[in-house]
Length: 180
Image (cartoon, rainbow, N blue to C red; front, top):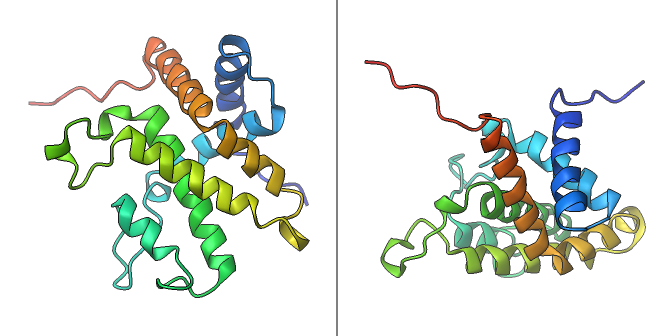
């Protein structure tokens, strides 16, 4: 049985490769494929806030996401759950920081709901690092990728910013026209 490919997968692979390899000189096919797949996943709105609280509502605040991932002092039921939640937090931070930097708060007064770019970077790097430490058994093969994502996090955000610029140039990220 063949795995279904997302309709945007090839498009995003090319856009990410153009930015990461062509403009940044970041030649890492595993990392490029991962980021292209991430763009596909978050192109579906329900995946951006897929973490839910105990009442089933989406968790939108970064601090709440981090707290929810703690298996010792928080509600994460296991270390496997921590890994999954930390992977999501890294993905979320990378996506928002690179594709929607305007969603970050640069002013302290606006930070109640919006983390700063620095906070996203710190959370993303830390989360991918934690995921990389799950380096045994079924996670052994993926661990080095998450270590590279943690090490190269700032470059990955910059690369996604370049992807966004390319998509903006193609008029693919423009909001729909307002109707009166």
